[in-house]
Length: 432
Image 1: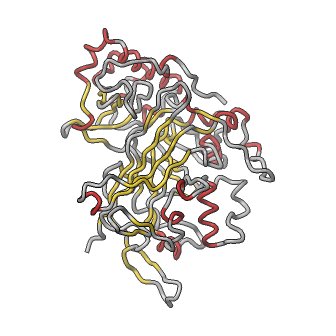
Image 2 (image 1 turned 180 degrees about the horizontal axis):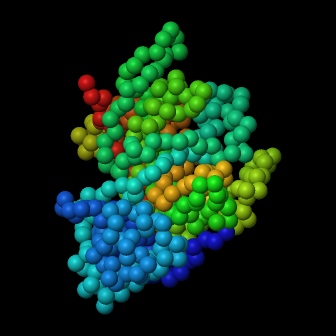
Image 3 (image 1 turned 30 degrees about the horizontal axis):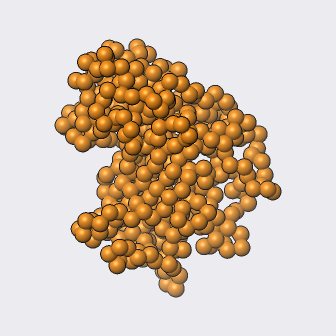
């Protein structure tokens, strides 16, 4: 497997001349994530986050690598994702040089915009969206609610389970979620009703952006899969649990999942994440080894990421009273049973063609203990154990006016920490 190498762009001592960049909690010069923004109602364009600013890359195309020139004037990241990996790495090297060498600042300053003054958009034109289920603790916790004696189905430890989501309803951080209507049936009812969901939930996930794709009928070998990943964002797979419980048999999630998915707008690149790769946790004794098409020695040695994921909650009343958000959970991204490369390799293993800009969700990433659970379904044990807010309110599932924010940081000894920006949305009432 070919993985991006650690180089001088990752040096913790590297400084930038951009105000606020040095020691920035999310976007120091060691990060340089890509996104799509529009300044003051102008057309959408590609940018890179640095400190509290965003750099307009189209404005700098004449001093950036020629191989990326055409991709940088597009209104989304699809063409950039489609570039060969070496061209994306060359662009990163040049951007790091421009943003660290103050003798070059004169050419870049006119292309800087304060992030607070721009609008951020979806990073890519999403052709397809697939959501996986690789958080084994989440799968176990949810399984116990329905099958206490047999929480994991027999295929779980052999197959990276996924389902086809809805690309049209993926939205960037900050866009509100309208509470969906749906069929739901109470256990003691004779028939379902069609009403607004009463058990609205969030799911803590990573979003994986596909780089180069594969032709229909071909595969992506596990040893090459990392080269087909452009980067990752944070993702919230909003879920109507009452609708889901009624509709999911026999074909799985449908309307309970496709009404809204939130992603953070910055794509932290595979190259930026090179210092934060760690070994995939060993499988418990007795678990089967991955089948050969999903097994790569280097992927097992470096296929996981050292990320800390956090979920924050605030109610409308908490915000009115000026209270800080409540942290609902926190845990490592290494609680994934399958690696990112295994997800990509499996998706293409039957000849399914992936395309640049396709989005893959990891599935809910939960830890083994309540403080690291990635959904309210787990935290409240299906609504049986509501929790109390600082205002005295209680919650089993999300109410109108509630806001969920997901954050993450990558960390490694001797390295600068980098972040992902927010993945945030507030719940609105169902329209009359």
